[in-house]
Amino acid sequence: MVSLMHIRIICLLCLTLISCQRDTTADIANLAAGKKEEVYGEIDTAPKTELNETAYARSINFGVTPWGDIDKMRKAYQPLANYLSEKLNARVRLMIVQEYRELVSDLKRGIVQIASFSPGAYADALDEGIEKDSIYIASAQLKGKDYYRGIIVARNEVKDLAALKNKTFAFVETGSSSGYKYPLALFLANRIDPHKYFSKVYFLGSHPNVVDAVINGKVDAGATWDGYIEENFPTNPPNIKVLLKTEPIPYDAVVVSRRKGADLAGKLREILTGLKAYTVTKSGEKILNLDTGFPYSGYVVHSQSIYNIVRKTGKAVGRYRKTEKAE
Image (tube, rainbow, N blue to C red; front, side, top):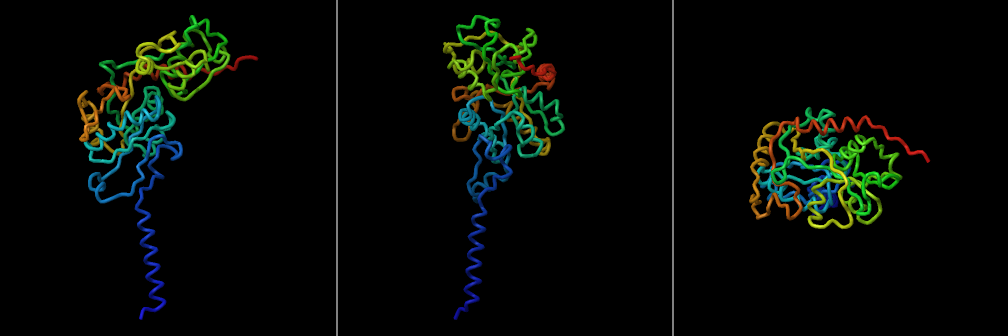
């Protein structure tokens, strides 16, 4: 006969087994860029299985700074993440961070191993010594162009910059090149202190928010980038026009964490610069798909000196001190 003690031991073993099975789910605590609740990118929390462990022996987090609608960005970048997974034999997780500076912190902390920085964020990162923690891989390119411009858009009834005095204005955020730094430098070159010149200055967090605010009359003018207008309003922008354009700004920079070493850097550079308009994943997904919102048509290797103009602008803007408008 089985004793009461034996029964208790069997029950304890069963509970331990159940607990171990529950622990097979992926621990996402150290995977998210920044705080878990602040991450826009979806984190794969599916239990690890023999199949996906065999397919991908390691995991790599791919962080991207925000520039547009998050769902649209996720849809646009996911084929690239899937393709990198296939080529690197790793589970590449796409992570759209919430703020520009967040990606710098996550790369330094080792949470993100591959990072695509907007030019303004990369210039800031270079000034903070990000080269100690990362290896430059390549820069994005669009239809043969290595640069884009920031623009000041306003409602159609606004005639010129002078007509914006005492009106409302919206920037994206302080880490954005086209949505803040270059437009601010443009204002300063015209001897305009935005916090004194405009009745109210807003920071709306994204290019879509800024453009929508102008279109819907919530603000009189705002700063964005020419590519956003060209992509979303190719023929007739609704009740908005371009008042000013900034100096040329280089596109995004892709880097790899030095913790992953030169081997990954070399492989990633070869993959990105080898992408063609017809490149697809094993399932047939097009990588450089402008129709689904991917913002670039390829990647090229530049000297990092092309970002010097961004750094110069950033430093000029950094010397700017907000002046509160007298009531």
